[in-house]
Amino acid sequence: MKNVLDLLIRPARFFAAMEGKEPDLKVPALIAIVGGIISAITGYAMSGLYAEMFSGTAAGEGMGMFMGLMGSIPAFFGFILIWWVLMAGIFFVISRILGGSGTFSGTLAVTGYGLVPVIIGSVISALSLLSYLPRVTVPVIRNFEDPAVVQKAIGELMQDPAMREFSQVSVALSVLFLVWSANIWIFGVRHARRIGTREAAVTVLVPVGAMIVYLLVTLVGGIPFTGGS
Amino acid sequence: MRSTRRVFILLAVLVILLPVSAVEQSQNAAAQVMVTNVTIRPQVFMVGDTGTITVEVINNGAQSVAIRRVTLYDESIRVESHSYDTTQYLGAGNRMSFTFTVRADVPEGIYYPTFSMDFRDAGYLRYPVKLQVQDQPLSVSVLSKPDTFTRGKKDTVEILIGNPRDNAVSGVTVYPTGDGIEATPTRFFIGMLAPDQAQKVSFSLTPSESTVVAFHVDYYNGMNAHTETISIPIDVGKSKVQAELLVSNVVVERSGSRYTLTGDVTNAGLEAANAVVITTGEGAVPADPYRQYVVGTLQPDDFSGFEVTFTVEGERTTVPLLISHKDADGNLYTATALVDIPARSPAEEKGERPFLPLVGVIIACAAVIGTVIWHSWRKG
Image (tube, rainbow over all chains, first blue to last red; front, side, top):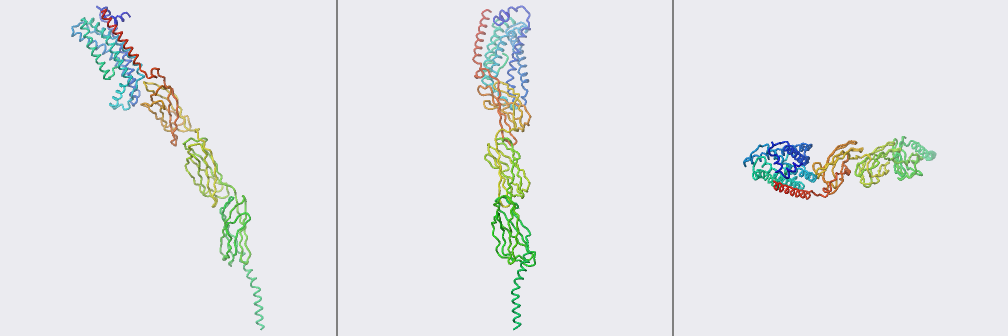
C-alpha cells in the first residue's frame, strides 16, 4: 500500500527504491492486464449500443454476443499493446534520441507502473458510462447493407445528448489522469533511461501531448473515444 | 160440311195435345244436363278470402236445352258476382262453365253453396258445392339464432316456414325488417309451399345496435295476400364463441430509452382470430425494429410468441398493449392489456443526466491530481 502511495504521490521516491534492482515486469504486466480488463468491460458495455442499433436487421438477430466480443477483445489487447508496449517503445526511442540508456524492459516496467492513474481514470469513466447508457437513445438500422444508412445511424448515436455528454466527461477524465500518469512516467523514464529530468519530460510529454491533442480533436470533431483511459 | 167438322175436331185435339208433348220433350232433354266438374280457387279458403267457384255442366242429350237462369246462392257465403240471367241454349253434347266470385266472410268450417240452373219449360238443376274455410295461417318459427349478437358482426338466423293448411299457398316470400339491422339476403323467395311441407331459410344479420328484428312471411292463398310475422330480439353484446386473445409470459426489458416487450398471445376463444397484430397504445411510442408485431391467424387454443419495441412518454409504470384481430367477416376487434414496465431511477424519471455531479468529480480529480503532481515535484 505504501508503495502504491509512493508511486502515485511520490514517484521519485518509488523509482529511487528500485535503483540497482533488475526490472521486474510481473507487477507492471498485472497493472496492464487490469487496465485491459477494465477497457474490455467498457468496450463490452459500449458494444450493447451497437448491437441495439443493428437489432432491426435480420443479421442483427443474436448480434449482441458478437458485438460484445468485437468490443471487448480489441479493447483488452489494445490497452495492453498501445498504452503499455507502444507507449514504452515511444519512450524508449525518444529517450534514446535524447541520450538515454538502459534496457527496454526497464522502460516497459516504469511505463506499466505509470498506467495506474490511467486505470483509475478508466474505472471512473466506466462508472460514468453505466449511468449514461440507459439514457442513450439508439437509432435502429433496418438496412444493414446500406453504408449511408449505417453512417447516418452512427452519426445520430454520437449526436445523442447523453452520448455527447459522456464523451466530454470521458475525455476530461482521460486528459486529467493521463497528465497524472505522465507525471509518473517522467520520473520513471528518468530512472530507467538514466537521463535528466528535462529530457525525461520531453520524452514523456511529446507522445502524451500528442495523445491529449488527439483526444481534444476527437471531442470537438464528435468522434467517439471510448475505453483506454 | 161433315168433313169440315172433322177437320175442326182434329185441330182441336192437336191444339190440346201438342203443348203437352213439347213440355215432356223439354223435360226429357233437361234431364240429360248434369254437372261434370267443380273448380274452387283457392281450394281451401281462409276466413275473409275471395275466390271463384267454376261449375261445368254438360248436355248429354240429343236435343239442345234452353237455360233461363244460372245462379249460386248460400246463406253464409257471399256471392259477389251476378247470376247468368240471359236465356241461352246448351247444345246437344256441349259443355258450359259458369264461374261465380264468392267471399268467405265466415268462420272456419265447411259450407255448401248451391249451384242452381233454371231451364225454360223444364224445371231446374240444383247442385251443392263443397267449400272449405280453414283459418290456419303458415307456421313461422326460429330454428336457430345466436344467444348474443356482436356489433358489426354477421351472424346467422334460421327461419322455418311450414304450411299446415290443406291446400298449397303460392308466392311465399320471407324478409326481415328492423332498425339497425343489415340482412343478407334482403329477401328470400320460396314460391309454392305444398301442404304439410316446410322450408328452411337462413339470413345473415349484422346489427349495429340492440333492436328487434321482424321476419315477415308474405304469401298468397289464391288471389288473397296474407302475411305472417315473427319477431326476435337482437341483443348486442359480447359473443360467447368469439376469439379471445390473452397475453401471457410477458417480459419487458429496457435498453437505454427503449423497451423490448416479449410474450405469448393465446386464442382462448372458440373462433379463429385472423390478422392478429400487437402493438403498444397511448403513452408508449412504438419504436423500431418491432413497432408492431403481426402474428397472423390464431386458431382456438393456439398461441404464438411476439415482440414489440417502444419508448415511453413521461413517467409511466405501465403501458397499454393493444391486441387486435379480425373475425371471418373482417370486423376488427381490439383488446388492451396493461403491462408493467421496469421502473426508472429518480434521475431518469426526471430526465436528468449526471453531468453536473460528474463535473464535480472531474474538478475534484483535477484538484487532487494537481496537488499530487505539485507534491511529487516539491518532494522530488
